Length: 143
Image (cartoon, rainbow, N blue to C red):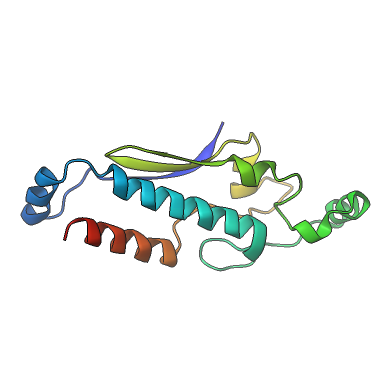
């Protein structure tokens, strides 16, 4: 089962926005930009920053996991970057109504939410940077 984020336009706040949407029915370009931006953000968290969308650093590995990764020789790659499978599984689906960012690995939800034996290391979620970007893209689209 894939884990993911979704942003959808389905609640309209004002009459003015309704009128603009009637003129700009195809939001596909906006959702494409938003999705691709967020895909880069998620991959960046996995590969470089090793922190959740709020900027909180992920917890360290257990001693057993660290020992196993030392034997494999890939400790420098980071907490969620073992075989690059998770990183490469981050995909974007978009339409004129929504964008979805998903991790297509079976174990993504365990990393995102944790288990009874492993702390959560959230790599997906809307950061302040992402929300500012989304706001800017929508604003530009409706000018």
